[in-house]
Image 1: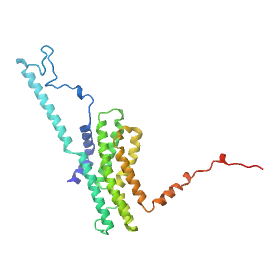
Image 2: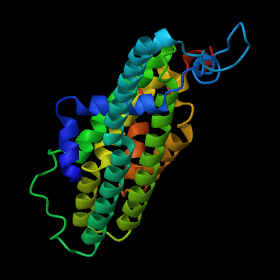
Image 3: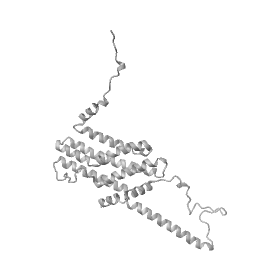
Image 4: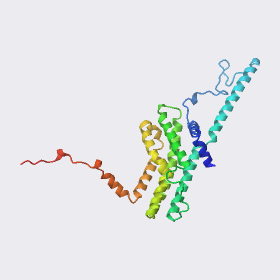
Length: 278
């Protein structure tokens, strides 16, 4: 059922419509407090009474027309709400991330215990799973909305709420998955180490998080206020990735190679040299 829902969102612009409905459900209108209640806020300037004016005998036809329009408007709103509630996008995103996290940790345990029946993937590393594909497209659309709402659109509150929720879900997944990965590195041999790295490369960490860093940099330059509520979760993601990179056996050598790059070597300033003339 989950795969069917994922494929339905990937095709025909369903993901864009689901994101638009999710943003509208979290959107706030700054002028809601100015709207009048038809049953209470209408005041008769002659009698001073609140509520709708008394109905006259000749107004029955007009009342029927108004009732028809009101009923049509309510039905239209109910249909729109039902469409928005038919696809709980963030619930699906949460389910996909948790499902992928459980599968990855199960594969890590299988690799360490030598059970290759659960780790053989005939698809190969170049094939992207539908879950990662959906999360990547959702991430792109969400950050595009975040960078577009800089001019004061009504969906700013929705963008911030979805970004904060999405970043928290990713932080929980990355922390648990890379924690299991770091613990497995201390028990793995060379062949298992290669398999573990290939597994992480095909996980959300390798597919989605690697692209998340570029989107965060672009969004912080264009619309930094959109990231105000998700900085703590993003810091958790960065620290978990850094700890996993430091746990690799080749981490010290890679750091030395990066520091030893010719462009990073500081040259001595010739003006500071003391010249002794005879």
